Image (tube, rainbow, N blue to C red):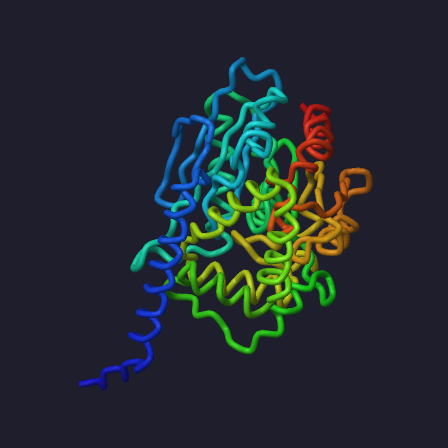
Length: 357
């Protein structure tokens, strides 16, 4: 009879710690909800779903005049940061510019479920785009933020036909040393995430804070202090604080492949990422692509996009840079929730999309 594996003596302690962290964060979230900083989303309907995602469709006050848009959030947090509040809502901005707005709502993985990795999420983006087109809306422009943008780029490189164009919002594609401060911190980690099981949201947030305390702790505190003299900035800061408390677990396989294949080995930019029986990279991403990057973002800056774009077809790419602003907590979120970004950058993004309708 084979020997049973020796139980991890710290497993119970870790589980208890994570449960306590989740309870404390939930209590903070409920308090902010009581003060009016909870959800303020546009109405939507679910038009397609799988065990991994649901597809939202938003209706504006008038019929859409522009092309369909498929918005892809990062699966690390809840999707409503795309629809945070009036005036700082990407969903609302898309509707105001006549886009037929759809959004992928990732479903959190469950213990014992199928282990989903990069390819599973990339194929999910493609399937969601095909679901948009099947509704008669046409081939969508895909917009992705952070890891959501990376996944959208992987999907488009794997199979470009389901997409009209690609818009990357603070989404890193290149992971060479020095491309971003966060990349360097992640790559230097000595431990490796197991491919099985789940990574609790609180554990992931804690790991990010330990890896890059300047980005995830001190800059957020400084932003809160600077927001005190501006009621609108303070309200935005508190809404984003509320959203940040809404963490979800990630599949260990996704975290493992993201760290090893992208952050450490930079396989995508090098053109040697194997996915779906193909090798993908800049040479297989044959779509018009636009990237919006903040000069102060330490996760998805220009240097995390430009090297990839340099290997794509000449004239097919464009980068828009925008400055830091107050109220967003993390500058990585400025393109989604920044007041200045919505006034100055989003009209340019909408015009770029309209030119490819």
